[in-house]
Length: 271
Image (cartoon, rainbow, N blue to C red; front, side, top):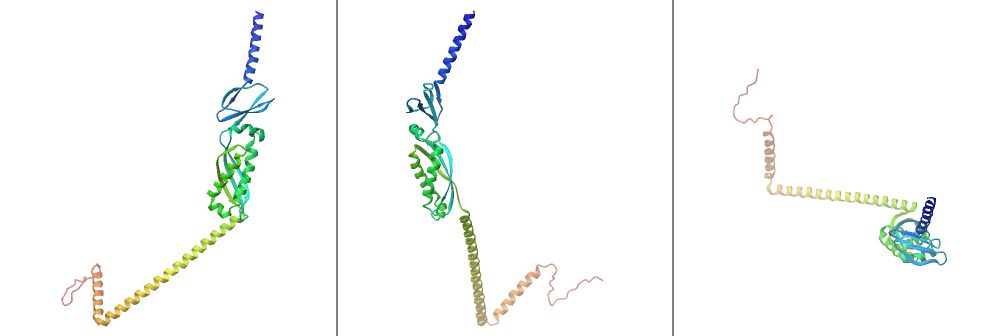
């Protein structure tokens, strides 16, 4: 019985050791990742291992896993415009490595290639592009600036084995002096617009006064001509029209009683 337990113990130990060896000889590459194999005797292998479970030689080979999915990174840069204005720019980059160039990236740059490459080349390209534009042009031609930065940065990153899926300017501000100058200019423009409105309003009022005076003068001239031609007849006509209007207004009032002339009327006056 003792020998049986001893045999079972040896078998279990052998299985445990065998399982550990097998487990150490397997490694997984997750979705969107790639692996580069480092061999202790031959160095970094040129082959790139895809997704899935793979075998390796324990202790001799070591897998280095790289994430090949697009990842975002914000790079802030302080630079100067063509007219020597300080510009604060933040660039948002979506980047990923070229899978076939991972052995070269690992050998020449390292696993932290994004930390070593992206800040330096982004600063270099942004300073070169922004220096071509004035501060005002950076605002009015922002789309052109963004496109030139994207083209130059994409070309520059490709030399390091990186692909840039998207490059965009997310933040663009200027120095305190330029901001104050812009605010003062806006205030001056608003005051100029207000002054122009006042002048235009005064001019319109002047024209209205002239037109009204010309109308009164024309009316007076027409009345004078009518009096000359019709004599007192026009005056009598205006009197009749005025009397008719007064009679109409009085007839609508309850406090006015019309008494015909030439007839006797009795009024009952209370004692």
